[in-house]
Image: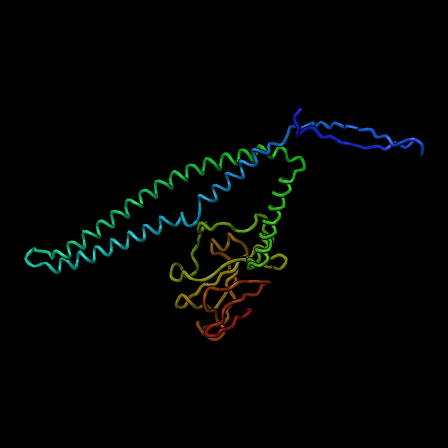
Length: 301
């Protein structure tokens, strides 16, 4: 039995028999055996040490070093291009100034040094990335193994608390966000809301034939008893924008065939006061609501 699994309990019991007897002491030793395996403290210490090393090796300063080198290299290249352009302007019989050539030579050497340093840094970071990935995987495996010793389910409860916090933040964000537009109920249609418009299923000519193809037609949204199958039609017979009468049919078949209509005229002339302007209209409770000619109002007919 290892020393970590052995607990010694010393109990001192004074025995007093009488005033004439001296006190005697007895030692009681209790041995406690742990039923489960010992917690691997060394593995936990190794994980903490590896995490500390990763934090030390991977810093924001090191991660931005490559960016600084690239920016410096770009600046040097732009400066080299400017100096070459200036050198070309100094050309005198294809003989460049010796001083300018020396400056360009020095700048090329500095650019080469930056390239070498950039290559070394990139290779070092690639090795560091591979090493860090392997260490992170080892730490994850070790922590998964150590979680088996969490008999009080502390980690499980902690993850649950984190999930609840995320859900709470999500709920707060939804409360502070703009409310979406209300969804209208589908009404009396048993098929639900309209999800697609593919094109006309059928068509028919009006009394004007193909001369006037603009207007509106439909069915009463709130028909009176007995008028559930009635349809109405308005043809914009003046400039494809104005109408002066409404035509009603007893069924869908009659409006398609164009037979048996009932006409209601607003005025004998078109356009004029109170006649129809534009195709935006609807019939509700046997009344036609439309845009009035040359006025910014709607009229109920």
